[in-house]
Image 1: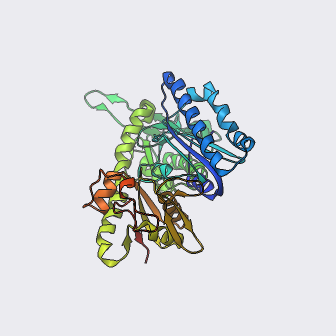
Image 2: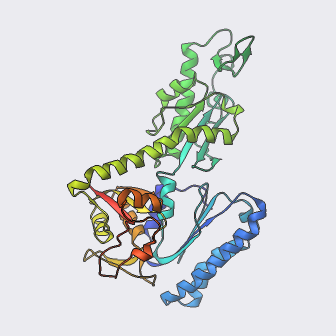
Image 3: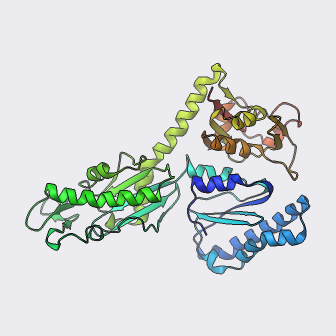
Amino acid sequence: MNEYFSFNDLETLIAHQGKPAVSIYLPTSRIPTRVQAESLQFKNLLREAEEQLAQFDLRSTVIREMLGPAQDLIRDAEFWRHQKDGLAVFIAENTFLRYQLPYSFETKLMVAESFHVKPLIPYLTNDGTFYILAVSQNDVRLLRGSRFSVDEVDADTFPTSLAEALRFDEPEKQLQFHTSTSTPGSGRRDAIFHGHGGGATNDDKERIRRFFDQIDQGLREFLQDETAPLVFAGVDYLLPIYREANTYPHLVELGISGNPESLREEALHREAWRIVAPIFAAAQVAAIEEYQNLIATGRTATNLQKLVPAADQGRVGTAFVARNDVVWGVYDAEKQQVEIHEAYSPHNRDLTDLFAVYTILRDGAVYVLDNTEMRKQFNPNVPAEKSSEEMREEAHGEPPAKPVAAAIYRY
């Protein structure tokens, strides 16, 4: 079981090409009474996956072997009792991966010759992941959050308390930590550090800095491939010292002020999301504004038949795809040609997913937008309520009038 999903995991899924693959997305809950309903829904999706796999001319024994680990999951009551907000399952020959994530998905089943990864992209980007480093003398916690929830990370790469980090120091030099104390007429005040027999000194700060150096080293190991924002939570005295020690490039400017020992995870999540939400939103807004400014230059496009080859060639710097639209088709990489199909059939795939995948593999940025937002930003004259099926043309005809994808070319 995987509780976290990173770009490394995404690249693992993308690497699977050319053989039948099942992708299942299921919204889940943390409510025990939902256990039976969610496992039943998963069972029904597996039954449908079995029917679709039969279209790939696979022997029934091969299909049963592929789906075996997922079938075992149906009967695992303990597994269903400990869900988060979304479950993503990926199945192929000799492959069974499952992720329980603090991110909700719409129910989806895709069977193709590649894994369907588009629903996971917002988890890593504009709706995505952030971390909270909550630090006090007695406790160091790393929490991983999304827009909707937060969970504590079980990381053993950094010290869990100041006392642990400095456990080899002489006892008489140990710092004392007083937090959120009150004085008559002045209310609560921030924590202070001081040694035995005096106020905070440069020596105290140096000891705290060494503590933070150890935390930073552990975070570098744990977050080595991450780009998610990191929010520091601690008393005001600590944040500037931590900034000096920090080497993680995505530490945000603002922090959560106060002693985190007195804050529940829900409160930390609420305060952190208030800080990081504008960061996520700003990147997408800036990308859309750049697209609008470049329309007259020829560096933008919405024709999916042109976008897929361009992304394959590494010419797409920024991609936009509609969250719920699926465009079935095939792409001949050798000929750099795209065929759009009317409906699902074995051996084709969702071209919007392929477009996003190629962009990611060539180090481009991908934004997954709600369908209405996609219509508004990239073709405001087309009614947003029309479905992609209504707008899709013949296989070799013009691409859909309603944009399901858009791009800013690098050159």
